[in-house]
Image (tube, rainbow, N blue to C red; front, side, top):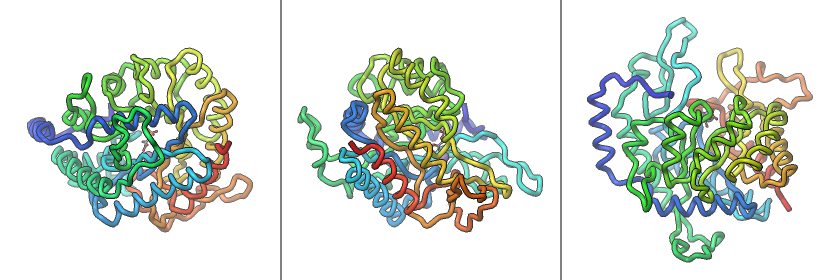
Length: 395
Ligand code: PEP
Ligand code: MN
């Protein structure tokens, strides 16, 4: 379930009570606008650009880092729009991307010390000492405050919506901010921010919430919870997926078949996507409820370096995007967009390691690795990848 071991349940209860008394971070009506746009993407009339940090930091809920991230997201969306000729829905991994699933609950340091893993700023801090790594429930309050700070700044920049005239008119004049998204991982935080909706309830912590590859069991808490929400939800599709399980997820997450409700965020890796995705796509098309097909070319192409750090070869990332578009097109489905980890900073986290050179990721230096978690594309790498995808989707 990827939940932290909070040291004191009484503190958690108190934090949850405070969160429940706060106003929701986003209104339900904006989540509905996003669902309507995702439905357009599902039908092949639009593209989605979901991008941002792997792990947002509380210290970056500040004017300059937010402005830089907003600029990157909107300029990538504009690039995709120009290159593809389709309207683009920008969705940030922003204003709440503070909780991280980990493949191990523990981290062993080079000197042999074993510490609890960093689980995102919502839980603990990345510094390698016991105090920093001890889960602190009060960080959920700070997370709420930081998300509110980021959202306020996103709203100030919200531009009138010309790209998306709404035929129904009802919500058309509401210029939504850049839409926000994060992984819905932490049960205590997410359920305390549930709010009553028009029919049932919705998650007020962000517009779109996704379920990670490690927590997507069809009968697990995360899936059952997300199915009840009126928000659009995403689910990561990693290499352990079976065609039957994908069909089941599309149904369980969307029992009423609501348009735009479910996005499948495919992250199989540049090799495995060719073997696994065709079967999954075929089964979901035949037996499932329609979904928005997004490509996350980052998480299936991650390698450990000898130094213990992680990287991702840019070549493999491009290759997975190419394979994704071809497979969807071969099944007469719309490759509806990208899900990326990017930063406007000049980092060297993902590496250029073309398959036809002897440069293996194990030998590449990363002088500027500042991500608290996974390797992100820098500005130039992100632009090149989005241009590549735009070229593939151009009609
Ligand atoms: C992520 O998006 O940062 C992540 C952990 O992804 P996944 O669940 O696909 O591994
Ligand atoms: Mn990540």
